Length: 424
Ligand code: HEM
Image 1 (spheres, helix red, strand yellow):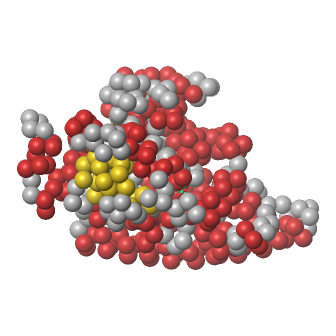
Image 2 (cartoon, protein in one colour; image 1 turned 180 degrees about the vertical axis):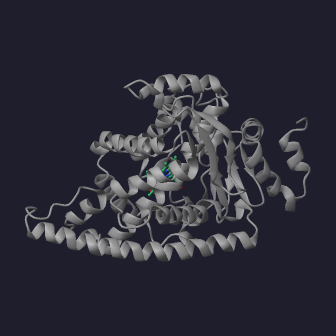
Image 3 (tube, protein in one colour; image 1 turned 60 degrees about the vertical axis):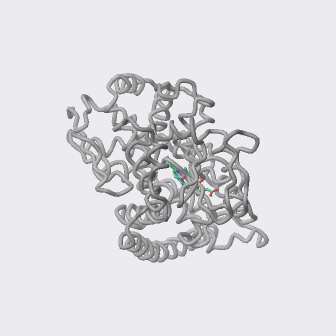
């Protein structure tokens, strides 16, 4: 392209400016963000403000009460994620981090490897990887490790899908048509009802099972360890406000967070590697090693190029001067949307040496794969073993190759992607 993005942007009528920005975010994000970082690091558009440099993105994501998660409020039934730095958020997030004991992680990685191997061994050399693997593996982990048993795998996948679609991809800056936007809300509401009834049934049944286990001192009834059972086996003082309803809400959150995010990350990492044969070869070699550190570093670097979202989003609660004292200091006004563009921040040379280059084993702390600040992902440690292990199991298949590219069917998520290998 000859003219600069900003020249085109400035020459466009206000009413059409954001549509142009949206198109560039969707189709040519890296060169667009590069120009913004250089020439206008904070771009105030009629719909929202884009913040593109590493330091400024971190600044926004650390000002919890100024840049709030208000956009999540209408999408969530009082889940911890819609709370900014308050008592409920601190209480329930720390409690759930405690339940997801990090000592479990080696076991979780083995579970993921087993589930993944099992699916691939049934594939007889061909698989539509998005539905039959990328979504199915996390959904199975949700059943086996989180303990959300008794629902069909396909239902768990569907409940996560519509929740994630509405929560992360149905805001004014997504520019969905009014019909599609309403359709997504309707599907989300419909599936939330089903998820709610399921959670009530699950918690009721498991509560009785835990009671029976206690009454028999675990001699006759001994339940399998999983997160829901752990929560129900634990007694919480009344002052902690963690009643059975809050417990159910948090169990549902585990399911919603786990499936579509993992699916998208794994599908996109695989496609990135298939499109970059030199890194595919290195990854395949690393996949053979018992120590997974080298392999995992390749996976995280691939995800930097194709993250599950190019930005996070917040609502500004009070006027704030961002990047104060710099030549791009900008007032962000109360009531407006701010998009900390995490994809852009991960290509900022201020934090990433030679950002255009693929360099595995970069400093982990500069990635934004699981967010940053108070809302950093609750499931990140699970994701940090699940995602690379899923990719690894695929790359261990002999002569693994992609048949074409991911099909998104005009939506936000990968919907189908065909792979083949030599069955042994
Ligand atoms: C493995 C199961 C997962 C669970 C249970 C989970 C759950 C959550 C929860 C509860 C939050 C909100 C935390 C808060 O508000 O304090 C969150 C945030 C986030 N998660 Fe996850 N998640 C999972 C996997 C993933 C994966 C695989 C990715 C990406 C590859 C991801 C990316 C994110 C991001 C970027 C945020 C930050 C959102 C924001 O700041 O607005 N999550 N996750």
